[in-house]
Length: 460
Image 1 (tube, rainbow, N blue to C red):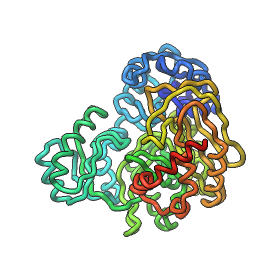
Image 2: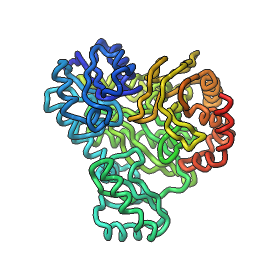
Image 3: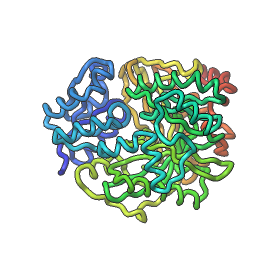
């Protein structure tokens, strides 16, 4: 069915991003919001807005009944969940479709399979995709967990079987540490995802985090190349780029083909991302999980391919088939994205919500700033600290680094601390320039450069 009115079940920069894409397709939009977000940019931009509850996400953005009621009351015929909140909630996807609405994303059954790390691992193995050595299934019993851990060997990672975002994860180095951490990981997973099941996985030393962007229409899938997301703090991505500076062309082709094979094997519909660990030492890659939604870092893929992923998601959800063959997707240049958050990197990334007292957005060729900020906007303290994403494109990686340095120098966000000083140091770091990093590189670097972060902040 053709979508006429789209309800955006999210907030912040991704809500703004979806509203813009819908408007370009001639689709009217509805922004749902909590009381804390009544003055948000998404609310100002949407054709209609509905208050769905108090600031607490559990009573607003995670309230399925309230979101569906807003769709019914406004006559919306489709819902886009963005990322986070209900985006990977299979029950929500089912409820949307049961209400006769269009769900912009993969079907609930697909989310159940690929959103569960154990089920996704089984699907990957069936599709011939290599996986990290780990438990054969989810583990709920501590004694079973102990036996499996000893069989896999240390170091290993304890992960939540459901969910993502780094929650419920512990890296352990011996059986004593393992036995201490299992109850903590299970409790954290239960609190975050209402599921205390665990999954065990071998730790790959100094691995890179590489992910492949795919689009599917339920029958056919294509890839849009890969992104490198190895610069992470506490398993949260800080900096992303496309393509990966570490993959040789032959490896890129093999990796991306594997992602398409897995997506097609589960009848994937919409935009999704398959995440891998790439072992520099051996040249091997391993599938770890799939994100059944649009990713925060999707703009770098858009910059190197020229494909608007959010618009394509909406088109596919509305019943269109994929408009591209794989041969239509070409990669040009290099793109880098840095996350600008309301956090103080010189004070252990302490959150600092506040009112925007000054805003200068960088411009020029190849520069994009996806944000929900405007002059005078008060950033609420109740949600993720992401303020926006600064993205640059240029003809190659060295040129993109120089452009990012220039754009960061131009960017000004007054009234609260931001992670801009961190990125100003990273973009000029010699190891970053050589792409000589891995998923555990950033945290020791932060410890060694804490004094520079303080000095950089003082000079702003």
